[in-house]
Amino acid sequence: MMTQRGEVAAVSRLRGALFSVTMGSNDFINNYLVPVLSVPERAVTPPEAFINGMIAKYRQQLIVRRLYLLDARKIVVVNVGPIGCIPYLRDIMTTGAGACAEFPNQLAQSFNRKLRAVVTELGAGLGGSRFVYADVYRIVSDLIANYKSHGFEVADSACCYVGGRFGGLAPCGPTSSYCADRSKYVFWDAYHPSDAANVLIASRILDGDPADISPVNVRQLLFD
Image: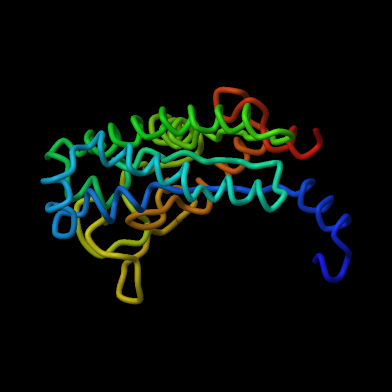
Protein backbone atom coordinates (compact mmCIF):
# COMPACT_ATOMS: atom_id res chain seq x y z
CA MET A 1 0.00 0.00 0.00
CA MET A 2 2.78 2.42 0.90
CA THR A 3 4.55 1.73 -2.42
CA GLN A 4 1.38 2.18 -4.44
CA ARG A 5 -0.23 5.12 -2.63
CA GLY A 6 2.59 6.80 -0.78
CA GLU A 7 3.22 6.97 2.95
CA VAL A 8 0.71 9.69 3.83
CA ALA A 9 -2.17 8.01 1.99
CA ALA A 10 -1.25 4.59 3.39
CA VAL A 11 -1.17 5.86 6.97
CA SER A 12 -4.51 7.60 6.48
CA ARG A 13 -6.07 4.42 5.10
CA LEU A 14 -4.74 2.30 7.97
CA ARG A 15 -5.88 4.77 10.63
CA GLY A 16 -9.40 4.72 9.23
CA ALA A 17 -9.57 0.92 8.94
CA LEU A 18 -11.12 -1.48 11.44
CA PHE A 19 -8.97 -4.15 13.09
CA SER A 20 -10.21 -7.09 15.16
CA VAL A 21 -8.25 -9.18 17.66
CA THR A 22 -9.70 -12.48 18.92
CA MET A 23 -7.44 -14.61 21.12
CA GLY A 24 -7.56 -16.94 24.10
CA SER A 25 -10.10 -19.72 23.55
CA ASN A 26 -7.71 -22.18 21.90
CA ASP A 27 -5.03 -21.39 24.47
CA PHE A 28 -7.34 -22.62 27.20
CA ILE A 29 -8.78 -25.58 25.29
CA ASN A 30 -5.56 -26.92 23.76
CA ASN A 31 -3.05 -26.01 26.46
CA TYR A 32 -4.95 -26.24 29.73
CA LEU A 33 -8.16 -28.21 29.35
CA VAL A 34 -7.53 -31.11 26.94
CA PRO A 35 -6.93 -34.04 29.33
CA VAL A 36 -4.08 -35.84 27.54
CA LEU A 37 -2.15 -32.73 26.60
CA SER A 38 -2.76 -30.41 29.50
CA VAL A 39 -2.65 -32.49 32.69
CA PRO A 40 1.12 -31.80 33.12
CA GLU A 41 0.52 -28.07 32.57
CA ARG A 42 -2.31 -27.95 35.10
CA ALA A 43 -0.21 -29.90 37.60
CA VAL A 44 2.53 -27.27 37.70
CA THR A 45 0.60 -24.11 36.79
CA PRO A 46 -2.30 -22.87 38.93
CA PRO A 47 -5.22 -21.40 36.95
CA GLU A 48 -4.47 -17.81 37.98
CA ALA A 49 -0.83 -18.16 36.95
CA PHE A 50 -1.83 -19.54 33.56
CA ILE A 51 -4.24 -16.66 33.03
CA ASN A 52 -1.67 -14.09 34.14
CA GLY A 53 0.80 -15.60 31.68
CA MET A 54 -1.70 -15.20 28.86
CA ILE A 55 -2.39 -11.61 29.82
CA ALA A 56 1.36 -10.91 29.98
CA LYS A 57 1.72 -12.25 26.44
CA TYR A 58 -1.13 -10.01 25.39
CA ARG A 59 0.83 -7.04 26.75
CA GLN A 60 4.27 -7.98 25.41
CA GLN A 61 3.71 -9.25 21.93
CA LEU A 62 0.37 -7.73 21.85
CA ILE A 63 -0.90 -7.89 18.35
CA VAL A 64 -2.90 -4.88 19.48
CA ARG A 65 0.25 -2.88 20.32
CA ARG A 66 1.96 -4.04 17.15
CA LEU A 67 -1.07 -2.97 15.16
CA TYR A 68 -0.98 0.41 16.86
CA LEU A 69 2.67 0.87 15.92
CA LEU A 70 1.67 0.04 12.33
CA ASP A 71 -0.90 2.87 12.46
CA ALA A 72 -4.02 0.91 13.39
CA ARG A 73 -6.27 3.11 15.49
CA LYS A 74 -9.73 1.48 15.53
CA ILE A 75 -9.36 -1.88 17.22
CA VAL A 76 -12.00 -4.33 18.42
CA VAL A 77 -10.83 -6.79 21.09
CA VAL A 78 -13.10 -9.83 21.47
CA ASN A 79 -13.09 -11.71 24.76
CA VAL A 80 -13.25 -15.47 25.37
CA GLY A 81 -16.72 -16.99 25.12
CA PRO A 82 -18.30 -19.50 27.52
CA ILE A 83 -15.99 -22.31 26.45
CA GLY A 84 -17.40 -24.64 29.09
CA CYS A 85 -20.62 -24.71 27.08
CA ILE A 86 -19.18 -25.98 23.80
CA PRO A 87 -20.21 -29.60 23.01
CA TYR A 88 -16.62 -30.85 23.32
CA LEU A 89 -16.13 -29.68 26.90
CA ARG A 90 -19.69 -30.63 27.85
CA ASP A 91 -18.87 -34.19 26.77
CA ILE A 92 -15.49 -34.54 28.47
CA MET A 93 -15.94 -32.45 31.62
CA THR A 94 -19.58 -32.37 32.72
CA THR A 95 -21.59 -34.71 34.88
CA GLY A 96 -24.73 -36.57 33.85
CA ALA A 97 -26.76 -33.40 34.26
CA GLY A 98 -25.23 -32.06 31.04
CA ALA A 99 -24.79 -28.46 32.16
CA CYS A 100 -21.94 -26.29 30.95
CA ALA A 101 -18.56 -27.26 32.39
CA GLU A 102 -17.98 -24.87 35.29
CA PHE A 103 -14.17 -24.82 35.49
CA PRO A 104 -13.54 -23.69 31.86
CA ASN A 105 -16.12 -20.94 32.24
CA GLN A 106 -14.48 -19.75 35.45
CA LEU A 107 -11.16 -19.55 33.59
CA ALA A 108 -12.77 -17.56 30.78
CA GLN A 109 -14.45 -15.14 33.18
CA SER A 110 -11.23 -14.52 35.09
CA PHE A 111 -9.29 -13.97 31.88
CA ASN A 112 -11.98 -11.63 30.54
CA ARG A 113 -11.91 -9.42 33.62
CA LYS A 114 -8.16 -8.93 33.21
CA LEU A 115 -8.46 -8.49 29.45
CA ARG A 116 -11.04 -5.75 29.88
CA ALA A 117 -8.66 -3.88 32.18
CA VAL A 118 -5.88 -4.19 29.57
CA VAL A 119 -8.15 -2.86 26.83
CA THR A 120 -9.14 0.11 29.01
CA GLU A 121 -5.49 0.79 29.79
CA LEU A 122 -4.47 0.67 26.13
CA GLY A 123 -7.30 2.94 25.09
CA ALA A 124 -6.23 5.52 27.66
CA GLY A 125 -2.51 5.22 27.04
CA LEU A 126 -2.16 5.02 23.27
CA GLY A 127 -2.89 8.45 21.83
CA GLY A 128 -5.49 8.69 19.09
CA SER A 129 -6.59 5.08 19.52
CA ARG A 130 -10.14 3.78 19.86
CA PHE A 131 -10.29 0.38 21.53
CA VAL A 132 -13.60 -1.38 22.04
CA TYR A 133 -14.27 -4.50 24.08
CA ALA A 134 -16.69 -7.04 22.61
CA ASP A 135 -18.25 -9.22 25.31
CA VAL A 136 -18.85 -12.42 23.35
CA TYR A 137 -19.03 -14.32 26.63
CA ARG A 138 -22.20 -12.42 27.50
CA ILE A 139 -23.66 -12.64 24.00
CA VAL A 140 -23.16 -16.40 23.57
CA SER A 141 -24.32 -17.09 27.13
CA ASP A 142 -27.54 -15.26 26.31
CA LEU A 143 -28.03 -17.28 23.10
CA ILE A 144 -27.62 -20.51 25.07
CA ALA A 145 -29.77 -19.52 28.05
CA ASN A 146 -32.55 -18.04 25.92
CA TYR A 147 -32.15 -20.12 22.80
CA LYS A 148 -35.84 -20.53 22.06
CA SER A 149 -36.47 -16.80 22.04
CA HIS A 150 -33.62 -16.46 19.52
CA GLY A 151 -35.19 -19.02 17.17
CA PHE A 152 -33.13 -22.08 18.11
CA GLU A 153 -34.29 -25.54 19.17
CA VAL A 154 -31.01 -27.02 20.46
CA ALA A 155 -28.45 -25.12 22.53
CA ASP A 156 -26.16 -27.81 23.92
CA SER A 157 -25.38 -30.23 21.07
CA ALA A 158 -23.55 -30.07 17.76
CA CYS A 159 -25.42 -30.24 14.46
CA CYS A 160 -22.44 -32.05 12.90
CA TYR A 161 -21.57 -34.94 15.18
CA VAL A 162 -19.77 -38.27 15.43
CA GLY A 163 -20.01 -39.37 19.04
CA GLY A 164 -20.75 -38.28 22.56
CA ARG A 165 -23.92 -37.19 24.26
CA PHE A 166 -23.51 -33.70 22.81
CA GLY A 167 -21.65 -34.63 19.63
CA GLY A 168 -18.43 -33.27 21.03
CA LEU A 169 -16.08 -36.25 21.08
CA ALA A 170 -14.75 -35.93 17.52
CA PRO A 171 -14.35 -33.16 14.97
CA CYS A 172 -16.88 -32.72 12.20
CA GLY A 173 -15.78 -34.60 9.07
CA PRO A 174 -16.84 -36.75 6.11
CA THR A 175 -18.09 -39.59 8.34
CA SER A 176 -20.14 -37.30 10.59
CA SER A 177 -23.91 -37.28 10.88
CA TYR A 178 -25.82 -34.02 10.50
CA CYS A 179 -28.92 -32.51 11.99
CA ALA A 180 -31.91 -31.87 9.73
CA ASP A 181 -31.79 -28.07 10.10
CA ARG A 182 -28.53 -26.43 11.15
CA SER A 183 -30.26 -23.07 11.62
CA LYS A 184 -31.99 -24.49 14.71
CA TYR A 185 -28.71 -25.29 16.48
CA VAL A 186 -26.56 -22.85 18.44
CA PHE A 187 -23.49 -25.02 17.74
CA TRP A 188 -22.42 -26.31 14.33
CA ASP A 189 -19.73 -28.73 15.56
CA ALA A 190 -17.87 -29.67 18.72
CA TYR A 191 -16.31 -26.22 19.02
CA HIS A 192 -17.94 -23.56 16.87
CA PRO A 193 -21.26 -21.71 16.73
CA SER A 194 -23.51 -22.34 13.76
CA ASP A 195 -23.88 -19.81 10.96
CA ALA A 196 -27.24 -18.80 12.43
CA ALA A 197 -25.64 -18.13 15.82
CA ASN A 198 -22.74 -16.27 14.23
CA VAL A 199 -25.16 -13.95 12.44
CA LEU A 200 -26.70 -12.99 15.79
CA ILE A 201 -23.30 -12.61 17.45
CA ALA A 202 -22.05 -10.40 14.62
CA SER A 203 -25.22 -8.31 14.71
CA ARG A 204 -24.78 -7.58 18.40
CA ILE A 205 -21.13 -6.65 17.94
CA LEU A 206 -22.04 -4.40 15.04
CA ASP A 207 -25.02 -2.65 16.62
CA GLY A 208 -25.12 -3.82 20.24
CA ASP A 209 -25.63 -1.77 23.37
CA PRO A 210 -22.84 -1.10 25.91
CA ALA A 211 -23.60 -4.36 27.73
CA ASP A 212 -22.51 -6.26 24.59
CA ILE A 213 -19.74 -4.01 23.32
CA SER A 214 -18.25 -0.87 24.83
CA PRO A 215 -17.60 2.01 24.93
CA VAL A 216 -19.15 2.05 21.43
CA ASN A 217 -20.32 -0.61 19.01
CA VAL A 218 -18.60 -1.36 15.70
CA ARG A 219 -20.92 0.77 13.59
CA GLN A 220 -20.34 3.76 15.87
CA LEU A 221 -16.58 3.08 15.84
CA LEU A 222 -16.45 3.02 12.06
CA PHE A 223 -18.25 6.32 11.62
CA ASP A 224 -16.88 8.11 14.66
